[in-house]
Length: 163
Image 1: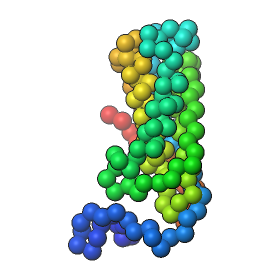
Image 2: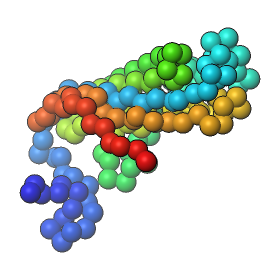
Image 3: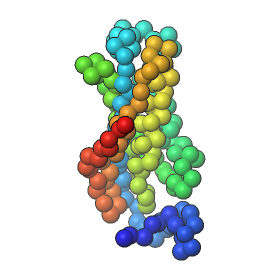
Image 4: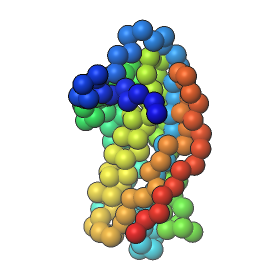
């Protein structure tokens, strides 16, 4: 079994020491979905939401979320974020919006938590914009798609059963 890096020798939580590592270019991609009613899809297609353009608001929210990740996750290192790309795809045939967050840094540790935060905050923002039309909208499928840089490259699908 590998050593847990967030625990010290006495089993207490600690921030990982990355001081001896070399900075490398790191990228992470995270996706998630907002499942919608047909009424919400129609409102989005007609640009008829009372609060305005949900995609612009969600893009800004996602970028801000990525930038504030280390303030939210206790043992997360603050990183010099070099790029955050937010992509939104309304998929009316599936009654959902796909959100893709991509984050980039040149640093000593990974940037996947920033991508997770960006995607999740963007999804929450979309929900907030849409809830008047569809209070039953739901967030699902938030997962890491890709992680590069450092010692490992990650790109595999992991799903779990929902009740």
